[in-house]
Image 1: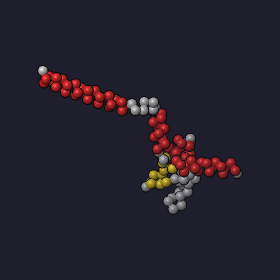
Image 2: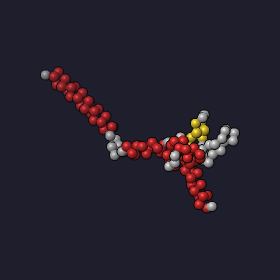
Image 3: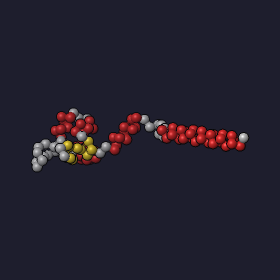
Image 4: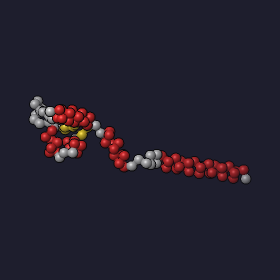
Length: 113
């Protein structure tokens, strides 16, 4: 009889541990249930600091061809650009912060003329 009680107690404890683990695992899946897909995308966009040519065009509301006219023109020693840019190997990137600053400065200079 005593052995039966010990067996039942151990079995009950094991079942309790399994159920408790399952509850904790499911609770962790829904830590932020109110966060929507749109909010997740906004967080991803905030993290991104460098923009490619296509992303720059989208960010400025221009076509890719129009944004290329604002980017670097010419070869490496004499290359000029309307927009601030960073060149890594052969790929051109635009700093989102620098673009925002440029827009504020250009907009102010343009309004004062």
